[in-house]
Length: 365
Ligand code: FA5
Image (cartoon, rainbow, N blue to C red; front, side):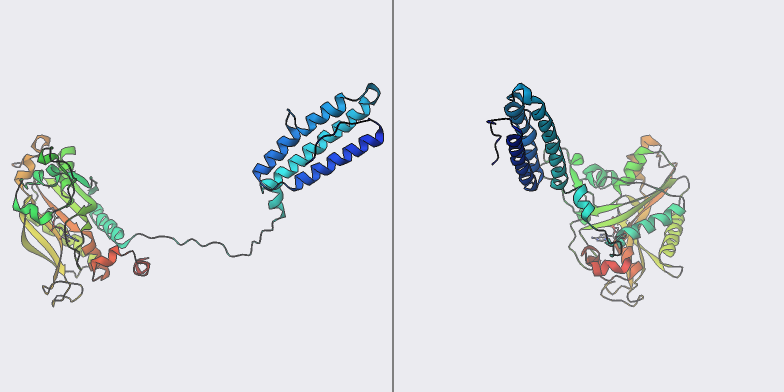
């Protein structure tokens, strides 16, 4: 490793030899620099104010030179300063792999580019958006609500009193460790989008015309038409003089807008605590055309949604906000989005929608 020598004499040949040795050391150390860390060490070894090689040259050669030789030594030392600066600068370019190494690279503009595959909407989300658009065209607004709900919004305010047997049809996941809370404040994963009916009526007085898409959770065993996590689109209309005819006409129009003018709908009597009367709405089975198969459980019909006239008891929970059952009436419905996607695209197993199999999903691109 090079060290700056003390000069025995300051004659021209002796200075020439010393300068030659120093420049040789500079060149070989500069070529050994490969990375950022190397370069820093190289720079400091040669240029550090305290004890760097240049500062030693200054002390041992320039300051030590006798008066008559000072001028000659000074010129050589200036030259050395420049050489070191240049060597450090060009080593920097190589160490960072930047400009100088890029300059030596060639760009072949004829090579094919990197093609990034474009994603598309999942068929479930696409169906949900299609349903929402059908209702937007009828003048509905669009809302949202939380997936984690309190017992009050998911059940109690929808007229499912504590311990009511109808709660069993919508068992779900409850957040643990809430025993100390009053039952109505306990948190759970919502089993349907209907709690957003109450949130909406708390936020705005009648008239209301809204659809609410979202994800819901149930303790349901997976099979060809059931999943423990699925999507619904809720609808709520409240105004003066709304009747069951409005409900039937609206849903029949929506089903025809989704499936085509020849699609038949059927209203079966049903029960929901928050609607009276209530109905399950089904469409002709798209697989067997109505003759009966495994998918429709031999009934010829696929149930797509629940609906009914808002039960006057529900208005009691939002009465302060202008919902007087003597003055207003309304209807509500909740559609299973996956079931509608299945009917729209002829998918005979709901589980395919959650499998994440690209070969399946690509068909909807
Ligand atoms: C309800 O969830 C009511 N909240 C619907 C409602 C809203 C009625 C407003 C009256 C007024 P139901 O449990 O039937 O109802 O579910 C509605 C739809 O969700 C069903 O018709 C079906 O299409 C779909 N669905 C229900 N359970 C599942 C499941 N496990 N997997 C996939 N889809 C389901």
